[in-house]
Image (cartoon, rainbow, N blue to C red; front, side, top):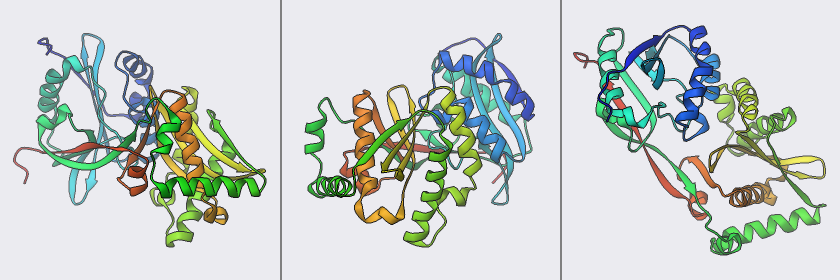
Length: 329
């Protein structure tokens, strides 16, 4: 624990938040975020598309050097004045970036700064890590978990250990692709507009065909956000778009992101006309194999669906922290 005090800076205007980006990125070089969701590229793009209410980002410094950033805003939600982390809703990991050696000091400083405002009723901070220091500020509850897969040193041995039904589906998809002319797997690091268009169109079409619903992209109105943030992540080589083509037709797409030694699977889609062939399974297998070859884990992000468990994913617990302003019930 660092005993020295930290200095607090409030950012309450969007233009000031965007001006912080170069310094924020320099801070990130010292204290890398664990996921792309915690980068300034992701969070500032989120704010530009979804931000509302009053911006309230807490920046903590030792002298002039940033040691912690808590990016949030105050808005009306469920009849309360809520303080929400920027990125909430469509981001799977949201621990605010901080120098871990300052954790106790930053929690104490954040508690004091929150108490200085009387225009909020509740902080509802979701998608935090199980060991988040923010739990000391209020009530910590279990949140929707994520899941992650490590394939081990030998790909063939790993694949052989998968359930029989999974291996059967992979074999059938491969054989169907060969009968129809052959499947071509590709990994793109650029924000290819055609691939993004395929992802968005096929994601919606799949949901309409399967459940009569619009899908999460339409429900969250996140199409424009996805196009922009993909470009910003690609500039830092954090983007990975996995695709499978049958001749010139894209039949399946995975929008992924890489940070350090993990690839995060954010959105998947497959052409509904080819759904019966299981090309989505085949693409996932090839993408996981790519992660293996790159020395990376594969993170499925939210949810504990059975297919993730069949691949061998382990659960990653997460927490939600609720902080009520003193005197507010």
